[in-house]
Image 1 (tube, rainbow, N blue to C red):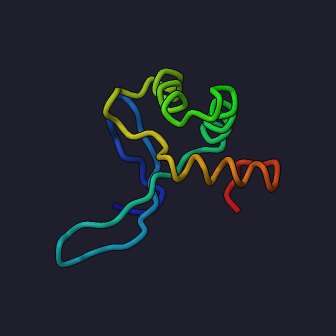
Image 2 (tube, rainbow, N blue to C red):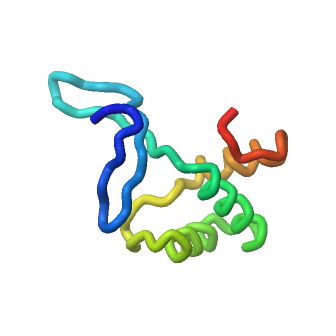
Image 3 (spheres, rainbow, N blue to C red):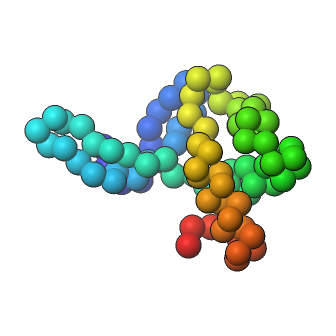
Length: 94
């Protein structure tokens, strides 16, 4: 797996960033790369749903047609994006 490579799922593709490789185990730690459009949707929905992470995740699944058990942004990422938005007015990475 390489940086920026798209990982295929059930009818979707996500870009990932390789954080660390383990050659002896033939595995790697990867980080999901969320586009700014999806970050903005997550932050906007978080605010409109009375700061509910669960409601935001449900809306994210629906909006981007992600199957129920597939990955969506985790709580830590969402709160980081919200904090970044409050500080800078942008959801882009610092």
